[in-house]
Amino acid sequence: MIGLLRRVPLPRLSQLPACLLPPHLSLPRPGGSRQKPPAGDPPEVRPGNLVPESHVAAMFDDIAPVYDRLNTIMTLGLDGRWRRAAVAATAVMSGSSAIDLAGGTGKLAAALAEQVGPFGRVVGVDLAPAMVDLARARYRDLVQLEFRVGNALQLPFANGEFDAATIAFGLRNLADFEAGFREMARVVRSGGWVVCLELSVPRPRWWGRTYHALFRRVAPVVGGLFGRRGAYEYLPASLEGFPRPEHLALTMRRAGLVDVSYRRLALGAVALHRGRVAPSA
Image (cartoon, rainbow, N blue to C red; front, top):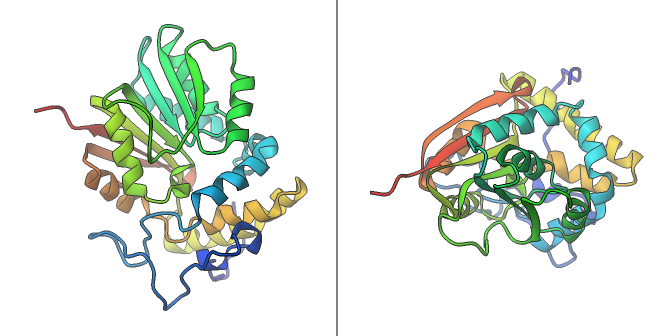
């Protein structure tokens, strides 16, 4: 995205659209109390999403019918390339097992299922029932793939049950980013990979400000074309305070992952992280 070279103030989560906030919710205001960032992170970084999980789930239930079309439009069709990079980062092979968290309509889970083949196993988990219903209907012929409604912070799976875990464009919606990585690491075997594909703010700083300002304007307009303007005001707002790639790598290390690395995609607008579950002593 190009244009808008003048500086535009970034939105705060406290300024999220009223349609996204339940009546009882009171978010921190600038200068007021707020969640403290973990040690090692700058003060503007938040450790999790401030919007309640129930409200996030309701929002994604509402946008489920148009979610894939809007993603394709707003990523200029590059989202498929990013998912392939995420699959490659997991290092799964034929017969492997993987879990995809906050998986939406199942595109990344399906890509993993194609990689592991009919003798492998992939489970897609999402908090929004409408997303899960769409995924089940779309990929019902893939015998190695199943979808469940569930919370990424409380997975009903045993320790070390999978060879890899992924989350794509869903980490920002979790109430606790570090806890999300810990839970992914818990269900992945020793030596397996945890992979995160997420939006980011590009570098240098002037370009990051320009990109975010344009994103703030474009996303609601595109969402409005499908009658979902409010939900797509939340999308760019959720980037404020989200850890930059180097800080997200710290979060992964605090969660116990090793060999953590990341690379920027799409001129820095997307970051692909991965970390290995520490081998057993």
